[in-house]
Figure 1 (cartoon, rainbow, N blue to C red):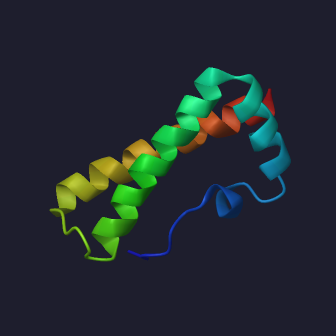
Figure 2 (tube, rainbow, N blue to C red; figure 1 turned 180 degrees about the vertical axis):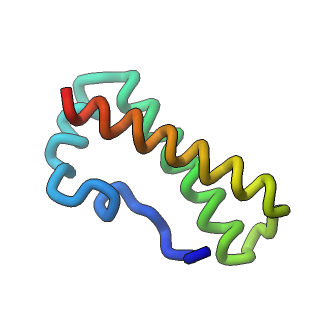
Length: 78
C-alpha cells in the first residue's frame, strides 16, 4: 500500500471551495470532515509504519475512510 496521505484536496480536486462552504454551514458535514481526517491520519501512520497495525485493522480503517469519503462526495453532489 502507498503511504501517501489522502488529503481532501487530492481526493476532491477543484472542490475545496465547496468543502469549505459546506463545512461552515453544515455541522454534520463538518463532523464528517473531522472523522475523515482522524481515520485518514490513522491509516497514513499505519502505512508509514509510525503506528504499525495488523493487516485486518488497517483494512477496516481503509474501509471506514472510503465510507466517509463516499458520504463527503454525496454531500458535495447535492
